[in-house]
Length: 367
Ligand SMILES: Cc1cc2nc3c(=O)[nH]c(=O)nc-3n(C[C@H](O)[C@H](O)[C@H](O)COP(=O)(O)O)c2cc1C
Image 1 (cartoon, rainbow, N blue to C red):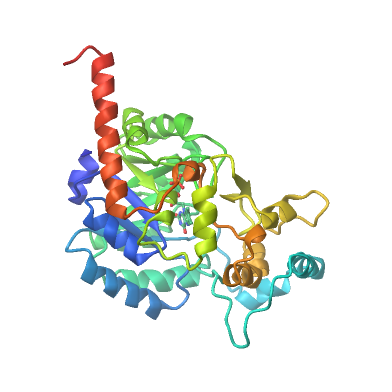
Image 2 (image 1 turned 30 degrees about the vertical axis):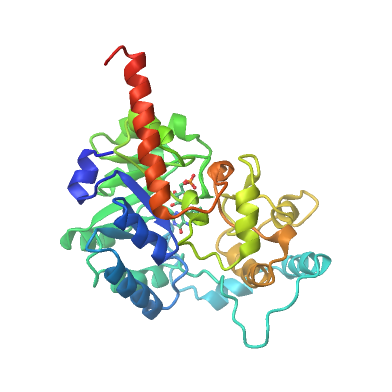
């Protein structure tokens, strides 16, 4: 599974893996893919430095990258406390009532809300970059929008390629105009923040829109046949996120959540604003149902919703309150039916890819 892009980055397979877990990212790079560590949950730069040190020691010299979340719209001079103050009381009460209805216990005294994500704030993301550029990362990816011009320039000075996620050809063109090197075309099926266009439609649209820039196909890819399909549609590689969540190297801290993921079918996710305020695909739970219910107050816009629900989500996760327990995950969750090592996922991807190529060759009448 080699393309011009995988050769340029010095990896054996054109398979890029996004993951919030350093052990998974390192295992992806060791397996011959390209591991990308999600930085959004690292509020403290020293925690990111600790995990990048660990990655350095565990990638066997293979290349890897980092993913940050810098929203396109810059909010100047607004602190987390200012944002907190904008949350309406009625929404706070709705959170309390929903938790009470499901008997969700409090956090222990002094226990911080671990889920508190502030990495979307530009000042936090910039702190992450200051750390990351001290490491030999080969790729910097940005989630919500085009990265600022000075960040692109800083990356390029260090020989770091810049990628950005796009859910439409229009977004992809904007990224290309901003001087990035790779577009990740992420379809509707994907876990996390998604647009409304399915990968089958999006991949060729984006590939044509930004040619000759390389495009990675993301969303709904979990087997080698799907990798072959993405490459057939013009992508120079694939970008997988969900499939790593049930690998043995992943550290979800919740056996109940792993069980839920393994049991879920492809129809058990929903694109909901419950978690961050922007539509993000995740497991459908009683929590997403409550926020998506027209009789409720509805989710607040980003970043208010993320701050509003941070403690609640931590409580649900720590106490494994099953009806409410969820995570971002894509429709490919239906194929995630057993815990496997990252290497086993790669073995499956390469053998499925070979089967698909052989099948197409037979159909095309080639020996
Ligand atoms: C648990 C989870 C968290 C995610 N968080 C981010 C993120 O912080 N930044 C980002 O660029 N993409 C994030 N994504 C999206 C992935 O980068 C990727 O595009 C997506 O998972 C691909 O589709 P798939 O889920 O069908 O594999 C996340 C996905 C999942 C499943």
